[in-house]
Structures are given as C-alpha cells and as structure tokens.
Image (tube, rainbow over all chains, first blue to last red; front, side, top):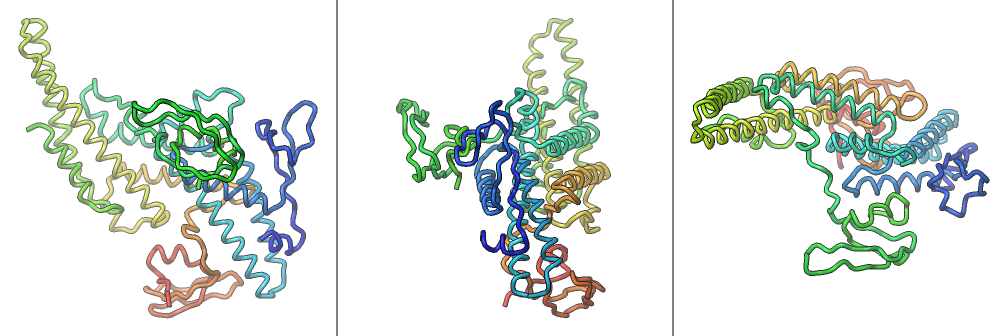
Length: 244
Length: 196
C-alpha cells in the first residue's frame, strides 16, 4: 500500500504534531531542549497504520478513548490530496481506479472510527461530560472541541425534551432526574483481547472471585491475551498494547 | 394496581422490534401523569395527617405510594428515552428526511428533538477536517468494489454521476454505477444492489 500511495504524484510526508506525552517513542525524535511539542514526520502508510490502530482500539474498548484530532486532520488532508491528484490524472483507468478504491477504504476506516466514538458519546453522555469537567489541565481529553460541543448539545436537547414532555407535569419533588445516575456507566470490567506491542512487567491483576489473591503478570512482546479492560486501560492509552 | 399503565408503555416498546417506532402513545402518557398527580395528592394529605394528627400508621402507605411514583417516573422516562434512541437510529438509517409514515408516529416534541439532533450532527460533521467536513453517515460498510450493479426499484428521474454524465433512473432499469453514489439511494429503497 505504501507504493500505491506514493506513486501518484508527489505524496506529502505527513507533518504530525506530537504532544509532550508521545515523547517516549525513540525512533522519530530529535530531543528538543525544552521538551515541548515536537513535529514528527510520518509517511502516509504510517499515518494510515496509526488510524487503523486507533480505530481498532476504539472499537473494542468499552469506554471512550482519548481523542486523536491530529490523526483525523492528517487523514482528511491526505484524502483531499488524493482526490486532487485523481482529478488531475488522466483517465488511465487502472491507476485511477486503484487510488479511488484506496480512498474509499481509508474513508471507510475514518468514518467508522468517528461513528464508533459518536455512538459511545451518545451512549454515555453524562459520564463523558463529567469526565471532561473533572479533567485536570495537562491531561489529554477524550473529546475534541467539536465532540464536546456535540455532547453538550445532545445533553441539553435530551434534558429539555424530557422536562417538557414529562417531568414538568410531574409532582414537584420528582421533577429532577439525575441523568448521571440514570444512564449506565461504561463497563470497564468487560474483557478484551489484546496483543502486546511493548513488553510490560509487573502488571497487577485483580481476580474476579474473592478466593484468589491479587497476582502479578508480565506481558511479553507479541503475546496475545484476554484480560479485563480496567487492568490494562493505561496501556491502551500509551500504545503499549493493541486491542484486537 | 398502580403503575399498570406505565408498565404497559414499557411493554409496548419492548414488543416493537428493534428499529421500529410505534405511534406515540399520548394517551398512555397522560394517564400515567394523572395517576402520579393523584398519588401525590393522596400522599400530601396523608403526610399532613401523619404529622399533625400523629397518625404514624399511615407511613407505610405513604412510602408505598412514593415507590409507585418513583416507578411511574422511571417507566415514563425509559419509554421516552428509548423512543429517542429509536428516532436517532432513523437519522442514521434514512438520512435527514424521514419517510412520512414514520413522521406520523412521532410527537411534535420528538420532531423538535430530531431536528436539533440533525443540526448538532451536521455541525459536527462539517467541522471534520479542513474544508467541507466528512459525511460519516455514508460508508457504512467496507467497500468491496468501486462500481456496483444496481436495479432501480422506483422511478427516480435524472441522476448525475461524477464525470457529468447523467443516468435516467426508471423503474426496473439496471445500471453500473459508482458504489459511493448509490449508497444513500440503496438505503432509501430507490435502488437495489444486484449480487450476481
């Protein structure tokens, strides 16, 4: 796929703005003296790989994961670029068709990723908003600014609707419904499949039943596991494991 | 028995298969709200009696009525919220314009909720990426091929394809068209994907 993407016209390597948190990856970076945001150059193939990883993680994680606006923006840029190139290219059917197919596939993955996020936002909207409200400065957000606006509108819309149709006609002491308590939380105890990308040591596993005690495991690179999401949630965020 | 009407509302939705929206049961909702009003008023007078008249034997009844009130509210909110979820699914299934049959099943407030949701979604989609945004209600399935064979199920009229040529979609005519252009029409039932 790398060849296909680079053969049509000149393909822009993607300029990727990396936040401080991502400075663990040694391959790309020249260390900046102040440790601030770095610009990382990704090939389009690597960008698509990141998109697919984010997509799969989002699909299989029970909760809304960190938002990746950089990936979305860069992929959209690439799609626009590809579209331009396709439009300018002569109608040599085969090459153009292959690129169109590639564009459709990428568009599908991106749409599916964003749809998955929207679905989770709508499903858990009071919890998503609460998490955003209690987020500390510097912690990455699970919502892009546009998603946050959408969530707020969704909440206001639903609250207004319920109030006008039913709640305001009810006895005075029952007119408030706490949506935070009424809407179920994401089940962080659900089990997920994962593949280990970076070796991890001393992961504390809390067992289901009371008889077994807590125990500690090591995760070998390349191994696959079925484990409770809560145990490995931070590893998904850091990219150390990939949900499958 | 109390809460019967409320349970009936919930059961009505439970019976409707996923994706279907039965007509809005305005009558049922009104009855539940009336029952709640009656229960509350009875409780009010009993609470006063219990306080001033010292009739603490009324307290279990008061508690029981309060539980019924809570249950009524829970069933009502569940009914309304589940309908909202179904209506939301309609936006993703049918697009911005709903078929008339479905619109008649929605109350005016539900329609308003739907319009607000549509607007919110449109604003969000337009904000994606640099230029005009991305319509994520398209591309619902992984693409298998660029062009697909479709048969026209209803008369639709002129349909313009990418390179400017237009196609006349008459009933029962067959065409070989780009997949992504047809997706919306397939969902609306105008075209049918022919799998040979």
